[in-house]
Amino acid sequence: MSMTIRGRRFSVLFMGLGLHAAGAIAADAEPPASTMAAGPTFFAANDNEHFNTRRTGVDFFPSLQAQDAATGLRYRHHEFSQDGWSRSGEQLALAARGPLAAGIRTWQLEAGAMSQGGHTLLTADGSYLLPIAKGTSAEFFINRDFVETRTALDRGIHFTFVGGSLEHQPHPKVTLIGTLGYQDFSDDNHRRHARFRAVFQPDLDLGLTFQYRFRHYDSTPNETRRGYFNPERYQENMLLAGWRYRYSGWVGSVLAGAGTQSIAETPSGPSRLLEFGLSSPLAGQQRLDLRAGYLRTASFGGPDYQYRYVQANWVIRF
Image (cartoon, rainbow, N blue to C red; front, side, top):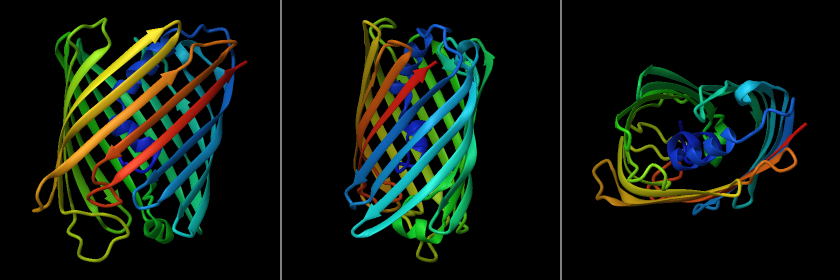
């Protein structure tokens, strides 16, 4: 899953285990009665640097297949603003997803183009899950997008992020996940990422999880002024607790974490995470998914970056 803080796609790759589990349970309950689906989407975020992001759009899947597999179109209108500056962008993409297997999406891919401020970029967001053995699987991912800061958007700076992870369950209650990734920026910057996550479920029916997360990256030295935060080395350790609950078809989840982060040679500082999720039951062939969260961690915005977001997806099946 997954890895910038600004932007929906990387936050999913990076933070989404507890919320993904809730969505998977909801998807398993869907009856295969519809043949197509469409619906609006909304995303809003702001941070302690007064950078605001808004995304509105619509998804259209003309043909739903077995186990929720589908292919369709995705449109997004982007709005960015900060202290009197503003910028808008348009994005159109082909979106495809494979079938669910035990509530887990086997593959998904979004490929298209985004235009903003006179810059046009071919964008991509995809992942592929490869089972290796019982309790062991590998996942490969790719993400290509603009860097979302004022200066980076003005310059058209973008990145391509590729990598893979290995997941292993040594015990039904314990899951270990290791991830390696390489992030190439259009301004000749490069980042090498390493992450590790350990998840413990004390009771498989309780919906409670405890997690430990570690992430590290090193970047090309900041020889010239870049349009985003770029430490030569970054490291974070975090402990988290998550809980999901299902009632009458509704699925709710919460994930909270606290830890420390260190940047190059500076002293360690705090990092925090709090996320909520709520998915409605399938009522009249409709479903509403809501997400909200708060993050305090180093990102493109700086070493003490604080970020808040809300997200809503409404799916109507025909």
